Length: 269
Image (cartoon, rainbow, N blue to C red; front, side, top):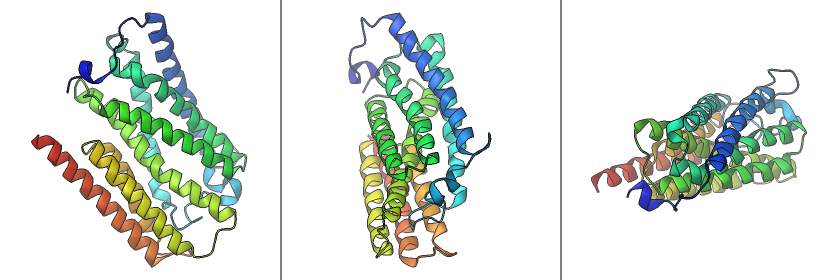
């Protein structure tokens, strides 16, 4: 499938519109990186893990990833900066794939710091709405990228890889965020049971996406990473849960295995 045949026609779009889109994506990347620094507490204030009474800390719920899992944000932000620079290059000014995804990428870059601000304000319920919107935006972006092939290995890593990694991590982050809100709202009864159900749903979404995307590695790796660290977080400590650990470990294995199988199948065609 060629890019030209897979994407909507982009002829007739003005260079000024392309320039505006590229500028907004670049500015959004700066805003997102600054927002992440604010969220980490680098400029003072409460870090995300401690905001809202610790509702989103690594031990807040049985589906919260352990602390080391959040190191993936460094890779995501580095990729977003690289993507912003890549799409600014003159050779990509009228790139068809950027035309159908650029504004969606920009939206994701602005929703990210909006989510950080919402959590720091202690509005966990509102943060679920924001991160769900971010998830939807990334699903659309990822779907549009999957509809065509990247022009080469650099685009495959910088554009497709970054969006896939971003989506995979936000998928598990959305699950953890929603669980934190439910627990804060008082749904504490039978937490191990509903944690297993939530993790099973995450695995099902991962399997579906792996098959539909023909085994895109970045998405599968990020979701597997998140699920693996949920498992690790439930193996010990005050929030240990054998049921949740087994469910998360099984979910991680299923997503990883399906991604690998789908990729092998796609390469044989």
